[in-house]
Amino acid sequence: MEQEIKKGLAGVVVDTTAISKVNPETNSLLYRGYPVQELAETQPFEAVAYLLWHGELPTSDDLEHLRRTEREHRALADSVRAAIDLLPHDAHPMDEVRTAVSALGAIDLAGSGSVLDATGSAEENLARSVRLFAALPAIVAYGQRRRRGEELVEPRDDLDYAANFLWMTFGEDPDEIVIDAFNRSMVLYAEHSFNASTFTARVITSTLSDLYSAVVGAIGALKGPLHGGANEAVMHVFDEIGSAERVVPWLDAALAEKRKIMGFGHRVYKNGDSRVPTMRAALDALVAHYDRRDLADLSDALEREFMERKGIHPNLDYPSGPAYHLIGFDTPMFTPLFIASRVTGWTAHVMEQAASNALIRPLSAYDGPDERHVADLTP
Ligand code: ACO
Image 1 (cartoon, protein in one colour):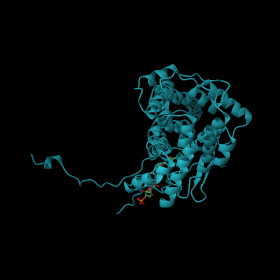
Image 2 (spheres, rainbow, N blue to C red):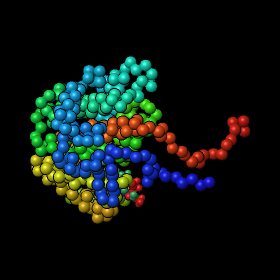
Image 3 (cartoon, rainbow, N blue to C red):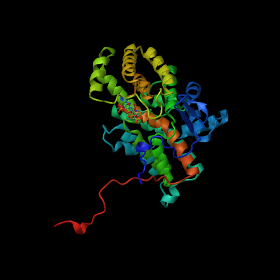
Image 4 (cartoon, protein in one colour):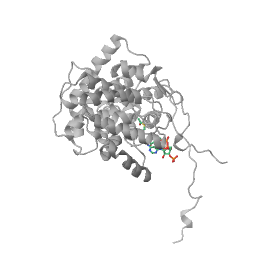
């Protein structure tokens, strides 16, 4: 019987989730029922992390408790730093962060007698999630500083998550506008149902492997330019084009070569990505703050031209790439920033998958050679 193949699992519903709802018809994205735009405009990232893990926004006591724990685990552990320092200086930061998370997992799970002990209870997995969330800013910040030949900057207890992340990266007190734009991006990137990296984390969890392994696998999936790698790729496109006047000839050539234009299109949203307007507002604030109208002009011109010709809308990576550039992050750091945010969604999914697990194991339709035998080979 002819089997129907759902290439790329497009349109396939594989499980339920209570973590987020993506509605392509209304262009909306809800985290635990709350519109992501509202959360990005009103909540610190720590509160959104709590929401994703627990299902409710934190009370002030809950938030205080999470912030205290986060501060306790902010510093870059010597052993993790040593693991990073073994890598070449020009290793891609995605590979660096993947290695650092793997090292964190090995350190945290040291002494677990068998793979069964590593799986972890719900409480253990929540504690691991908080530790990872707290540790990632130092890993990412150190990545940028190491590439630039700069010294590690120690975390500061008087700053909340977003401000401390910027402090550890740049070693300067960040401006409120910059903190707000960065916080928004962290909230907007945090969760997006069964995207490729989250699904990878769920597949790994479904084998009863541990949370760190799930996150390492998810990082591998996120690295690809069809997924998280697109925010970095957007900046390369902007560098290639150079200025707004060069958009038309550049696009003519790119489309003639059938190139995919990074930062446009989405597997689920076909009428626009609901996260874009909120991030674009943050980008506009940064453009005014840094007086970089030239970058906004280029971005507007490419979006206008591409929309006119192909009718394909920008996705979140389109405004976030230039926003991260203006804040001062080096282009290869953009996708690691996505990790620092998405780790909250990934770990929420790990816990949800573990709570009602079924091994994820789809079928395939074989289209190789018919059965044959070694003995039939002519000498
Ligand atoms: N540039 C040029 N053409 C595009 C683009 C694009 N960015 N996106 C879609 N198309 C075209 C395709 O070439 C295809 O045309 P065809 O029917 O003539 O062959 C048609 O639109 C449908 O595209 P698909 O790739 O089939 O759509 P799909 O849903 O599989 O892909 C994807 C979605 C992978 C995101 C795609 O739009 C893409 O490659 N975009 C660029 C990469 C990117 O920005 N990724 C970020 C995703 S969002 C995120 O991670 C935050």
